[in-house]
Image (cartoon, rainbow, N blue to C red):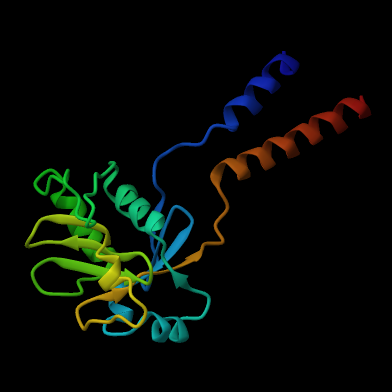
Length: 186
């Protein structure tokens, strides 16, 4: 019986759940294996200055900006050529907006939470205009040396948290070794 079930168990543990894993760590937020530094910690700085103050971090890429927004809101956004989403429903996402701002910090009055990274542009939520942003105006907000008193720097680092499926596979391997030893001893 076990010989028949073992291949099925390994097959199903290979599938990953596509739900985002989001953990608030006070000064940074972990989203799917990336630690995002709180945006209010780098307000008014250039990316070079922010990197100098925060060893181990790097600037977020455009793809990471998009993934952050989609992981936080559990949906795929459609961005126009400037970086504004054209599909966001502020009313339906009211609770998630509050969570987003609480996790990354309010960088400006009026329900705004912005950060930028060189080469990628601006990311975040623009409350008064009701837009999610990713890659907004990279020629301005992604330019080397850009800074603003109401905008943080989008810094990320790889998180040391292992994937749940890797832990499950390791556990199953240990169980398999235990069964094999037990069988030999009998």
